[in-house]
Amino acid sequence: MKLSKRRLALPAVLTSVLLVSGCVPQEHGWASVYKPAQFPKISVKMPANAPSISQEFLFTTNDAKHLGIDVIGKVGDPVIVVAAGWVARSYSEPMYGNRVVIEHGPDANGKRTVTVYKHLKDRLVTEGAMVARGQQIATLGTTGLLGGGIPHLHFELFRQAGGQGEVSADPHLYWVDGVGQVTCFDPAAVYDFSSFRMTYPVRCRGN
Image 1 (cartoon, one colour):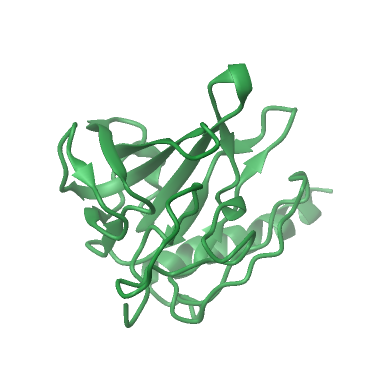
Image 2 (cartoon, one colour):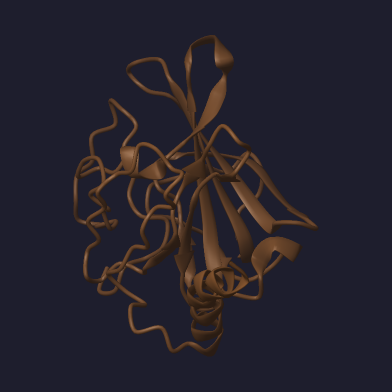
């Protein structure tokens, strides 16, 4: 049993080492698989030019949680807002480091959405500022005790659910191109504002 556990742990350790060393071959166009405990699991399609996702959303009833997605990159890479809104919070704290919280307001269905960007190197917006989809709000980093020394953006999405207020949701449910269809921001595109749909929180190559 001990040997089995060691074998199971090796891929995660190896991945961490490769990420830190910058030797991951799938730095673009790749998404990790969901952990077995996550349900439902969404089929994810990544654009070839999109920075890769190293960890998926996880929420289970036994308190196992990873309430967002981790997008890998290099320290200083631009972090961009996924949809228009305003800056509700911009601050630093010990566990998640530099953090920006964007309030997107109610859509045509009256439901509010909040997005959260963590482990940032630099915060480039102040509380109360209005932001447009695709606008740079921060740079990717490793800040916070939970950053693990691995350059990445931890991105979370909270969606209004009746009288419960905003609850954590899998970001893959809300891409512009459809469920599971990761959508790079295109400055030339025209986006529908009637319902909340988002583009990728990190710039894709060539965009």
